[in-house]
Image (cartoon, rainbow, N blue to C red; front, top):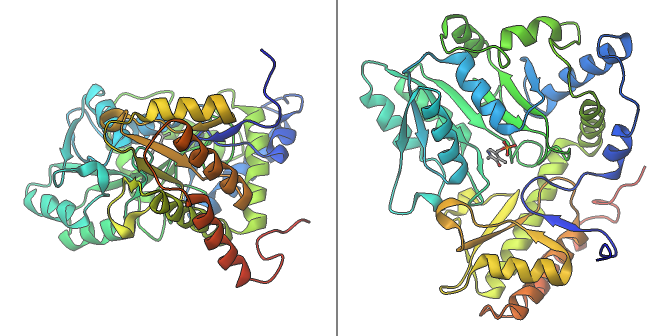
Amino acid sequence: MPAPAGRHFLQIPGPTNVPDRVLRAMDRPTIDHRGPEFQRLGREVLEGLKAVFRTRQPVVIYPASGTGAWEAALVNTLSPGDRVLMVETGQFASLWRGLAERLGLAPEFLSIGDDPWRRGVDPQAIAARLAADTRREIRAVCVVHNETSTGVTSRIAEVRRAIDDTGHPALLMVDTISSLGSIDYRHDEWGVDVTIAGSQKGLMLPPGLSFNAVSEKALAAAESARMPRSYWSWKEMLGPNASGFFPFTPATNLLFGLREALAMLQEEGLDEVFARHQRHAEATRRAVRAWGLELQCVDEREHSSALTAVRMPDGHDEAAFRKVVLEHFDLSLGSGLGKVAGRVFRIGHLGDFNDLTLMATLAGCEMGLALAGVPHRGGGVAAAMGYLREVHANAPAGRFVTRS
Ligand SMILES: *Cc1c(COP(=O)(O)O)cnc(C)c1O
C-alpha cells in the first residue's frame, strides 16, 4: 500500500505532532555527553525547563516515559508501607495508584460521587480526609492535573488551599504529563512538592523524556525516605546536574529537541500558549454541542484545554467510529480508556496546534460521524468556525499568527 498523501493527522492527546523546528534540531550527530558542548546543552535545558514549570527549584530529567517519572516521585520521597491519598479521576489516576500498590505503598483511592470519571479532584473531600487523619499517617496526596482519559482538569491551587487549611504535613504530588506547556500550571506558587511531566504532549517532543520538579520539602523528605531507588534517585542526578552533566548517558538528541521546544514556548509566551489552547478547546466544545453529543466532563470549571472527551450515543462504539475516521481521512483520534472504553473518544488539541489544524480535525470528526452512522446533527464545524471567526474579528491582524 502506498503511504497516504499529505501529513497524517495525529490528534490523539499525546504523543502530539512534533514541529519541524524540533525535528530539525534533533537531526544532528550525537555528541560526547562528557564534553563541553554537552555541558552547555545540559545547563541550558535544566535551567530553561524551570520557566515552563514556573519554578526556581531543580527539575530532574529522566530518559523514560511519564510512567518512570511517576515511580521516581514516589520512590524518592516515601518509605515501604506509607499511606498515600490518591483520587479516582480516570484511567491515569488509576494507573498511578496501581503503580504505588506494586511498589509496596498503601494508596487510599478517594472516589467521589456516582461517576468520578466525569469530574476532577474535589478539594473539600481531600480536606475532609486529611482532617480525619489525626495521626498524620498520610504521607502524600497524589493527583492528576489533567486527566487525559476524561478531559477534566483539576483545580490544583484549590487543592493546595484545602490541604493548608487542615495544617496536614502531607506532600503534594501532581501529574502534569498532559497539561504542562498547554494549560496554566505553577509549581512554586501552588506549593507543589513533586510535579511529574513528560516530553510527548504539551512539550511537542517525541516520547522518551520525563521530568520531576522537586520542592525543598520533597528534597528533605528524600533524605529519610526508605524506598529502594537507584536509577531514579534524585541525589544521584542532582550531583552531576549541578554542572550540566548526567550520572548516565542522557537522551542527547531528545535534549537538542527539548532546547528547541523550550525556545518555541518562550518565543510565543506561555500565557499566549495557554490562551491558544483555551480557544481551541472552546471551539471544540461548541462543535460537540452542535453535534448534539455529550461531553465527558460535567463541571464547567474543569473543562480541559488540552483535549476534549466526547461520549458516544448509547449503542454506538467509539472504536468503530475512530476506525472509519482513520481509514477515510488518515486522522487518529484518542480511544476510550479503561472504564470508558467503547464509550468515549478523545480529540487532542494540545501541543503544536493552530486554528486550521483544529478545523481539519473537526471536519474529519463530523464527516466520520456521518459515515459511521452515528446519530448527530450537522453544524459542528460551522459552530467552531463561527467562534474562531468571532475571536479573530476582535483581534488585530497578526495577533495569533506571527512569523519571525
Ligand atoms: C500520557 C500520560 C501518562 C503516561 O505517560 P507515559 O509516557 O505513557 O508513561 C500519565 N499520566 C497522564 C496524565 C498522561 O496523560
